[in-house]
Image (cartoon, rainbow, N blue to C red; front, side, top):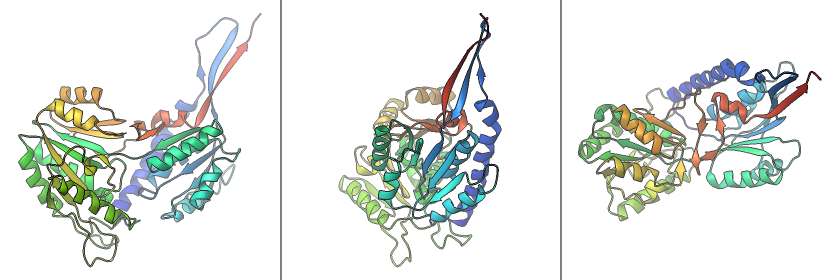
Length: 386
């Protein structure tokens, strides 16, 4: 899908890290819960498998988005139908091959389907759960279809993840990591940093340093070790980003870098783009960009930053860049986000639940909570005495 080679290697490493984490907690999480002794009774709670899990996976992190569901689903005793994106269909085949042998065999089946076919499959009575990663619009349709059969669905949808650089932030560290969080995988990540709020005392310095970091990215063949940014995976993404930039500029934003497609390039290349003074209701601040676009606006204080960050229909992750743990804790309490970072961004730790609020999704993957959505509770109530 155009990911630079070094980032592809990182995805493979992260794949095994997530799988190993879920393996390490499976026995404890899935073991029956024995309730306190009650004379004459045996009471316990089982975590029973659902049956067949239908996993609809996207193209942007083809290994990672699939492993979040496939490995815990199998560990919980389910079989998996994996419908991968038409941009990355061979990944599904590799998952199928990896689980072809065993006892029982063939627990993962790769499906190559059109969108209408993939949609119709949800109505099949043999499907017991749907896990979907993708757009809000498609996720809503998946949820509606699952509801007709009264089966559950997990939805990992979009994001418009904010970062706030507080007055006491380590500016160099914050800039380097925020820009990486915005531009890694060419910004094609649901948890990429897509809007930045900077305390007014650091605003000008932040913009200067961000521009310098962005200018260092190198376009080219993803298989070239020197390439640090590959092409966008979808051709229509280029005009979409250009329109977001144009709309922001019409609303008095300053375009400091990038903003237009790379002329003469063979591929869907869009340069790292820095926008300053962007109104919070501009499309670049409200619509998911899914590209290397960094819109920035100044804020007067923490209260304004918090209000701006929550002013979104999304709520996947948010990051606070500060040396003050108490400030980070206060933001963590008030932010409407599934994950809140201090001095980190665009990262998924499989020991924590991956979850969102508002239009960023429903349910959780990874951590013990990733197993709970792939099993159902069964109460065991035995009377052992008279």
